[in-house]
Each structure stands twice: as structure tokens, then as C-alpha cells.
Length: 541
Ligand SMILES: Cc1cc2nc3c(=O)[nH]c(=O)nc-3n(C[C@H](O)[C@H](O)[C@H](O)COP(=O)(O)OP(=O)(O)OC[C@H]3O[C@@H](n4cnc5c(N)ncnc54)[C@H](O)[C@@H]3O)c2cc1C
Image (cartoon, rainbow, N blue to C red; front, side):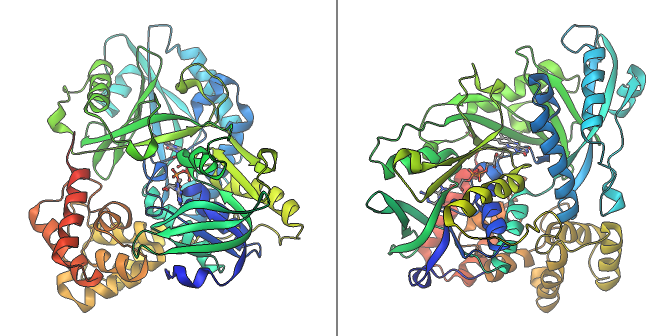
């Protein structure tokens, strides 16, 4: 991927997209693959915000059935299957266990009805391209078996559990990148660290965006026939800037955090309901437990948002109150991350009950013709949201678009018919690498694995394994040379998984820094700044 902002000023694009989260990149892919010229600008790194703060699920959302949102659940379940098909190396079935107790809230009958409905709404879940992605129907098991499978379940009053299936997205950061790469393969241009400072307006018509290159400090004007605001939790701020504060849009934001701890559960994502009626999940991820999430209204500026000590402690308390495993301590937390859900404002009391539905809004109604704002949604439904957005784009640009192909074609680097076969072929091709490394690189890089292995073969130092599950230093070079990584945090947290299980230790950290310094040509001052920024993310509050 090439980053050259100065080149972008000389053309008028059909679409300028603000924001490189999953919404922005999905819109870019849908539009570019249907023949539109597209530019996407992101003020930080691609996928840096909400899209990398998820529970790593591609899911229908069983709990939305409670709000009778059948349409939303069916749409999500359809999209779940699309992700399994188009991104087989990233998306895997995961069993969810919901223990049931004698108390009313977890009434077994209500739960069973919900699960039957969930199965009915996903009647086509068996028709996946890769047979290993087929999701079984739900089942119920007794208390004894529940305990045997997951010892973290509280035993007092346990009547059994229901087990149903959804999907885990093992690497939302790299999946977001794969969608962006797919857009780029269809001609889209993209730049990270490119902040939209204002909309370019002429007689109330939006003619594109004014962008500050946060790396060179230069400013650029990018012309576009239509601009799409996909700024997630910042969408209303972008609008307010454009309208000098007179925009009547207001996004509600809710904070959600996750913590990562040594393994508490086996293979199931174990779900419990807290006293306040919120669900907490302990999920297996990279041989650790991923625990989330919280849901608390956040009223500050999204740029100032940081995970707080109180949020981490409240999640620990939730686990200690509701699970039967050993008591979690603050020191057990190896990493914590958080993000803000941009919720469509539907006046619901308390953000947990707010809908995850999305909105595509023509800002002509605000006096900003030429601008569309997309708010809300789930990671899971982003492709569908982009597809829906094209209806408005088509109308506004008065153009014909070619047929959508985003649900029928593999994403970039994901052209894999059978994951099992693909991993076994990699093992034969690269016998010098461990099974862990083959699996880790194969799953996270898909067909690009070959380039990563070649880098490691050319330079033995890059073949060093830097995580218990097989990631390698070669990924750092790959990130910088081929994936527009600009900073140490891009490398540690979004291109490679070296930082997503917490601080990797002084030795590995120093090696990653040295490679970045060499390839990105940093001086001492820049290197120190990069180190400080990364350390501030590793350090728990
Ligand atoms: C805790 C939590 C858990 C979740 N779990 C799941 C899950 O498991 N599964 C699921 O399907 N969904 C989940 N979601 C929902 C999902 O993460 C979001 O719906 C989705 O990531 C929103 O993506 P987005 O692109 O709209 O926003 P973002 O990812 O926030 O992207 C917006 C981007 O716009 C950029 N931007 C802002 N202002 C500007 C500007 N002026 N110029 C340029 N760029 C700008 C930002 O830097 C940001 O990168 C979860 C959400 C949260 C918070």
C-alpha cells in the first residue's frame, strides 16, 4: 500500500471517506469494487479506534432477541456467514456456554426459546464455503457436564448450561486491514495519519476535505463529488466542525473495555449475567482469557478517552462475583483495552439497552449537500452497511454501479478454500518453522504468509519467535515495508500481535524498536517518543 497525500490533491474522486475503521474501509471496498474512484483518510492508524476495541466476535447478538430486534439479528447472522466465507483465516466458530441457575433471571426455558429462535434465524448457517466453518445447532447439557467442561462456572444452584455457536474474529485489526487492502486492489487510495481538519465547502455544497498530514505537517485539499463521514465516535465532531457548532447531531458514546488474563476458561466463551443485568464473557483467545465487556455512558471528548483503573476493577469484580474460578487480582491483568461505541441516539435509558442498528444520513438536510454520515452499527454488519450506503451514493452521484461482489469474493489475502489444507500445505513448504508459527502466521496473514516466511528465510534474525503462540520478528519488517505501519504502536498493536498480550519483555521490545528505528529511519528523539507512547499503552492505570 502506497501513502502519498500530495498525489491525492490532483484528482477529483467520486468519494472521499473520513475514517479508517471497519465502517470506512467497508464503504471504500464496496464503492471501489463497484467502479467508483475512492480516497480514504484516517487521522490515526487504520482500525485504531473502536474497530480494534471489540470483543473479537462476528456474531448475531443473541441478546438483541430480548429487544425483539429480529431483523438486526437475522442481518447479523447472514453477515456472520459472509465473513466466514470471505475471511476464512480470520473468522472461526466458537462455542458459547450460558450456565443456568435456579434463579429467575437465567430461566432455562426463556433461554432455550431464545436459542431455538437463534437457530431458526440462522437456518442457512451450514452452507459455508469451507466445511470446517459450519456451526452446529445449540444444545443443552446438565450441571455435571457443564462443570467438567468449564471449571470456571459457579456451582451453587447450577442446573446446567446451554451451548450455542457464534464466531470469533481472531484479529480485528488485521481483518480491518484486509478489507482496506481489498479496496486498494480495486483502485482506492488510502492514507493513515491524515486528519480531516475541515470540509471543503462552496455555497453549502461539500466539495471534499481539507487534510493535515500528521507526519509531514503539510496540508492538502482533496476534491470529491461526495464525502462520507465514517468517523465513528467522532462523527458528530466532524459535523460540528463543518457547521461551526450548529449541527444538531449528537452521538451517544458508551465505553466498553476488555482485560486479558491468564487462562480461566477452556474452549468455551462462558457468559454470565451480572446483578445489574449485563452480560460478561470470559473467552479463550491466544491461550489467554479475554474478558469483557463493560458498557457505561461516556460523555467526554473521544480523543481524551483512556481505560481507567475503576473500569478494570469493575470487570475484575464482575468475574469474581459471577464465576467460580480462582479470585482474579489486578496483577493478573496482562493487558487492557477500551473503546467507545458510537450508538445511534434512540433515547433509550442507559446505553446497554441502546440498539446497535445503524443510520445512513444525508446531510443535505443539515444544509451540507454532498455529505453523507454513517453512524452506529456493529463490526459484523459493516459490509451490509456499506452495501446499503451505496444506494444513497448511487442516487446522489446519479451513476450506475456494477453488481456488488463483496459477499461473493474472498478478501485480499484470504483466498483459502480449506483452512486445514492451507495450514498443512504451509507446514510442508516451510518445514523449518514450528507448528505454532505456521498456524499463527497462516491464520493472521493468509496467503501473504509466504512473504513473511520469505523475509524470515532471508534473514535468520527475523525468524526469531517472539510470542508463545509463534509470531515472528519478520512481521515487523513486513508491516513497515508492505502495510503502511508508521509508528511503533502500529507495529505492536495493529499489524503484529506482539503487543496485544501485554508487554513482551525488554529483550523482544528492544528488538522490535531497533527494527522500526532502522526501517523507518528514526532519530533518537523520535525513537524515544515512540517508546514512551507504546509504554503508556502497555502500562495499566
Ligand atoms: C467494547 C466494544 C466491543 C465491541 N464488540 C463487538 C463485537 O464483538 N462484534 C461486533 O460486531 N461489533 C462489536 N463492537 C462494535 C464495533 O466495534 C463498532 O461498531 C465498529 O468498530 C465501528 O467502526 P467505525 O469504523 O464506525 O468506528 P471506528 O473504528 O471508531 O473508526 C472511526 C475512525 O474515524 C477516525 N476519525 C475520526 N475523526 C477523524 C478525522 N477528523 N479525520 C480522519 N479520521 C478521523 C478515527 O480515528 C477512527 O479510526 C464493539 C464495540 C465496542 C466499543
